[in-house]
Image (cartoon, rainbow, N blue to C red; front, top):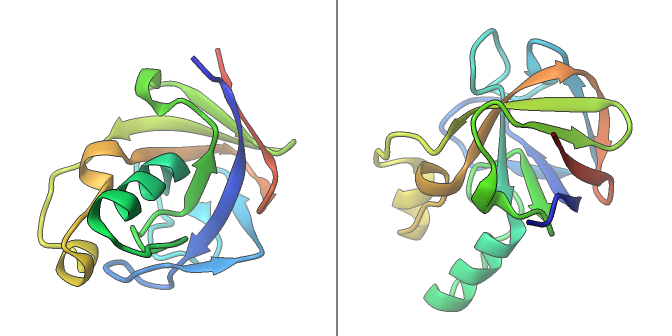
Length: 147
């Protein structure tokens, strides 16, 4: 299992139910989520992570050109093997930020993503996390699955 990767992108949207837009960097706040993101708050789905390899695979299979934020994910991670990640796992982003996985996947509903593109990955593959320790995350930062 590959336990290291890189941050392919960080994306935000000010409100829930919208596609997210890529940003150069973002401030992760312990116990809250990402500054200026609609999913920040005192709950278990503060930050959503998705595998870049899954996005690439869907683009190839469906003939799409989806990019960062199009699946409504906050962090697109390249190189990390998501298949063995379990609830409770901790993911380090860069030197400062530590996430803890609270949920894998979610109930599927007609979201903005599925209505717009006809496909969605978060219900089956999204890692929903809380921010354990905060800091700034930028594209290209290291990612490590901690034991």
